[in-house]
Length: 437
Image 1 (tube, one colour):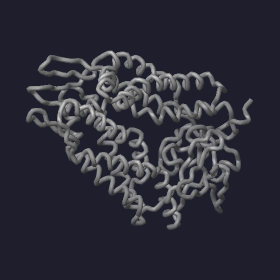
Image 2: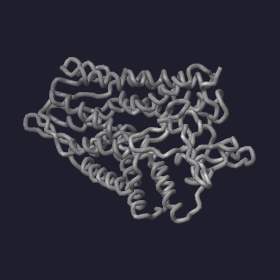
Image 3: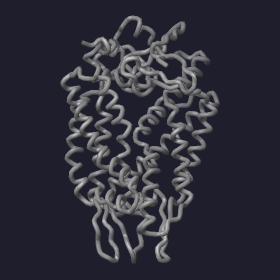
Image 4: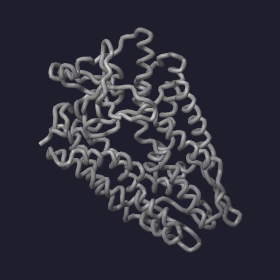
């Protein structure tokens, strides 16, 4: 359904929405559940038709919070070798990494798998329960902005795949016993997939509807499309406002949520290049240096990323070897190449295949987090293999370098503004790219 072509006019205001990827403005139109509204120019999904039922949202988020607590507090898996037993929770695995002078890696794992998902769920629970009660919670706009920021870095689904790979890897070393945390993380992954479907902007619209029912005044940018005035889009709440930058020298803020507004991300291309250069430099030691050291009765063995792929391949798990190879070797290289292409073409104001470059950017955003898979496998393996008289596995410097590569490439993707691809094909996203020469 091309909802961008549909018109919905209220008495006092148009409901406007801007495409995140190309900047084209559309009039918002109600959708039935499971329908999608796509940009008429770059085909990006603008929003989805989801029933904005505060009761249903609150119930799902509450269930996810309970499951999250069980997953974090319960052991994930237990190993037994010659009467010696070892088990680990996620927090315990992070603590082991911290004590082995891998504080940076431990901090990033803690943020991506524990703190930020907890912040997202906590904020959503507070907001949905308040809206369910018909209240406008204090700090609503700031909390929903926090949810959007935390969602970029939450990686529970990647962690779940890492847990499964670790379990398969450990079956060749010891007797593996699944623990409650393993099943809790599986359930949490499914529940978060449903919760993630609730874009925070849905909650903003729900809060606006409740405020409108109470007679409260709301921002109304009705003249943006009608007068073809320059527009600024809030990337937090999605509100489209008039661009008064030509008349005001001070920084503009969103009239609804207070976020800083900018027509395009400042110094987008320069920051993207800087982050890509740092990631490319660190990619070399990330693949050459050991990511793990194995100390056993037979001596010390160094494991690099590629040696882990070879191990799974020869141990009869080619599917897992392919997953690790793609996530840890192929994806980082393709991300570096793709973002370099996007930055170079945007810098040159190239007219070459803007639609395909936009799709490429969306793919990079989608797969970027999966490179953390190897880091999560290392975290769990180091925590589980702690048999002092038989074998102990510790993290190596390659893990730190690889973790930095993943974070830097994700930051580079976030710094790149995809609207730069389309800017020279139209003014403020209002000219259809199909009319380009």
